[in-house]
Length: 91
Image (tube, rainbow, N blue to C red; front, side, top):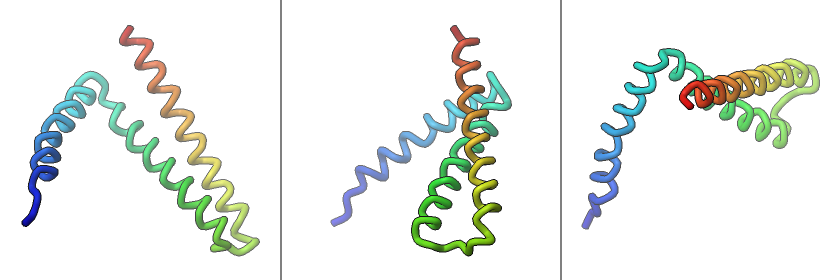
């Protein structure tokens, strides 16, 4: 027998999440791009770190990969600064 409770809870949460996103976007149209950039950059750093630990890159590729990782760190810092500014403006 399949338990549909989790599906129902997830489906019930989805409209709420969409409403929150729509509200945030209505208040600040840049919020969505900062949030997406933040998540994508964090994921990219995790992938780069994992692949580096596993030896997936050649030596000559490491500087380019390092630059990409540094750019992701910069994106995260910009997104966090933006979020802090927005929190301060709401107070």
